[in-house]
Image 1 (cartoon, rainbow, N blue to C red):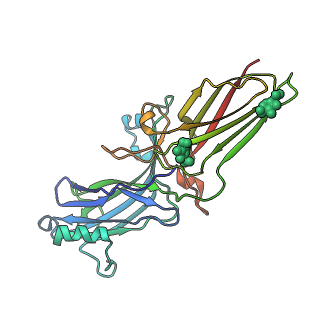
Image 2: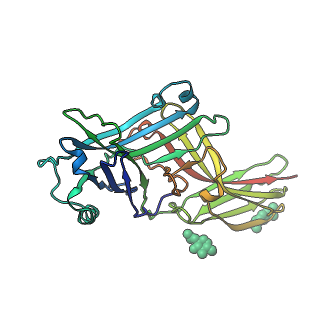
Image 3: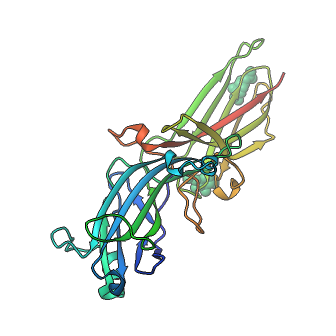
Length: 336
Ligand SMILES: *[C@@H]1O[C@H](CO)[C@@H](O)[C@H](O)[C@H]1NC(C)=O
Ligand SMILES: CC(=O)N[C@H]1CO[C@H](CO)[C@@H](O)[C@@H]1O
């Protein structure tokens, strides 16, 4: 599964003391061979900032959170690991490091916001995962697991890079996976089952129409059964299952059906059968389920089921934190 693209919505947020605000997009796309840079602007109140410096920080962190530990006074960050952290000074602008070329997005914002706006720019390193948010499972209600990205602007004094009270503003952003459609043979699986008391087998073949699906796109699952046995197939169930493997801090594995159909189709002994089932996995049909991975989470905004993790060459799996994949499962009930 892959996302088809970002929502181009610029988001603006102020620090508590109103000295600093940031404007940036919220979604940045990982196109597999390159990743959109994080380009935005910081707007400062020159009166309040006089003599101080303003920094911007991009962070990617992996959270394996246990809410109950917060209650007994353990810092929440004991289960938080920064996978990436980069801080830059935006004000006063550092001439030598300032990019003289601005992105289209920055130009638009700079034109609109005038002299109080200062651009910032980050490139994601190659080895970072995309945003994922795993809702906790029913048995471990305290565990919440996520790969999160954040842009934080803050004001500091002197040589310190520490945020002055009230001066910081955090903006949650997402890095989302976009996988271009691949040409190639569609996925296909085949199996043969032998039964005692039946000298000929049951053959099942399952074919999809392609390998990459974009969120909200229906999946056609073609099922071919050749029943040479003396048993009847009484029921066929077809499901799309999401598999999430947490590989950092733990080795939890979740397997959840995200779309399924239990058809009353039957295949009597000695006949064959062919049917295309269409399933549409959507987050809206899975909201109540726990242990489902999402494409990151933004407050007050909708997201979708997690995209499939694409493991790039030479990237350690553990660094990705969580691996998400999907499979189609066809199950047959065979009676006597
Ligand atoms: C799935 O099947 C429907 C109905 O036959 C068809 O219109 C659609 O194009 C198919 N989808 C793909 C991706 O081939
Ligand atoms: C035993 C038997 O009749 N098997 C049949 C199962 O279905 C296939 C496809 O129609 C037939 O070719 C087999 O003869």
